[in-house]
Length: 459
Ligand code: SAH
Ligand code: SF4
Ligand code: F3S
Image 1 (cartoon, protein in one colour):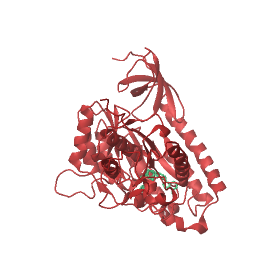
Image 2 (cartoon, helix red, strand yellow):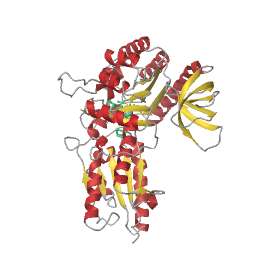
Image 3 (cartoon, protein in one colour):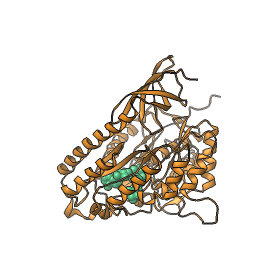
Image 4 (cartoon, protein in one colour):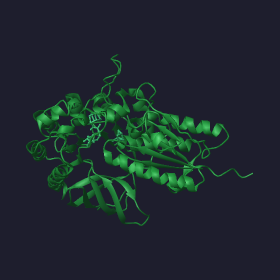
């Protein structure tokens, strides 16, 4: 007798790298249940939205897509499980299932495993997924009910690069940020578990690992002080010691936890790349204080000087928010000044978006008009682009070891792309395979990427 067609899934991901990695775990878990990838959302027996709620825009985008999903579910005669996971679910746990009654299951970012349990139960009742009675079930919580997604199987799209989750949650209280209330307090994953995962990945052929946490460099503060290694610096050194891992990156660190031992580990570990994402958020000390960032403009600039003294030629990228409540024009211009002083290689720039429940959301009297926020953003983007373009010129005329990420077809010489140690994307023609690190001559650079030439044939 022919076995029934396997069930099909589709996962749509919003948000940060942590969420992208969570989606790899969701996918791995679904494939572990014998499911296969659907061609698109409409074709899926199980449709998963892995959501973000950091700003208002992603919320709106999700609601639009959920409305679309209602139609496709109806066209399938109801035979589709609509699952919504991620940070927005935790923020909207009181409303989501009520406002979108065609959603079958909602699960917070710490409850990914419960999606599997839910599908298991639905199958166990003999109905099979796709025939789950309506009503909607929700799995929430930011305390002990959370589990590390890293305990689930995974499905990576990129065979030679991997994310490794080292902690979950965040203990900071940044006034604008919703993350602590949707991901909970910081919990570090066990040190030996992380190293074991990296060893397994290296054995599978992974050459680059990116360590992930909301506040990645405060790793270990909650681990027992029993003499065994537990700090972030020690973790960098341990991962650096894993054979086969050529490149180590991490994101996102908090400037307040960028301690000397971390800087020393970066400087001394060959595999830790000369690149750092160091979120500034704002350039004015008054604004930084209101944001509860715990550092001043002077301390941030001093930290950058210290890092540059230890790791010469390091590339620095950052996150900046413009138009937080009460930000004056002069304070905004301080942000521009700090960008000019530090000379970032790149910056993610955001317009402040009020999130319910955060401290800044109550400062309605000092909200900045949207047009003004947009004007500041445009000004800042011009500045950071010009600086990034100029910064990248230092690579033109040099040869960079590029880790090849993708190759589009099997022709001998063709277009490839990859990344340099400084994490700059390079487009080039060559014969290398994904996963190889090949020398590439850089011939042109913009703020976002570079153009190169692979002169020596790949080994
Ligand atoms: N844990 C990381 C990332 C948090 S979210 C960190 O601390 O760096 C990524 C970025 O989104 C933040 O760095 C911040 O720049 C931005 N962000 C967070 N909340 C925001 C809000 N309410 N409005 C606009 N941007 C925000
Ligand atoms: Fe949000 Fe601040 Fe924590 Fe980053 S450090 S996740 S910005 S609260
Ligand atoms: Fe968004 Fe949650 Fe990441 S709110 S930015 S997906 S931690």
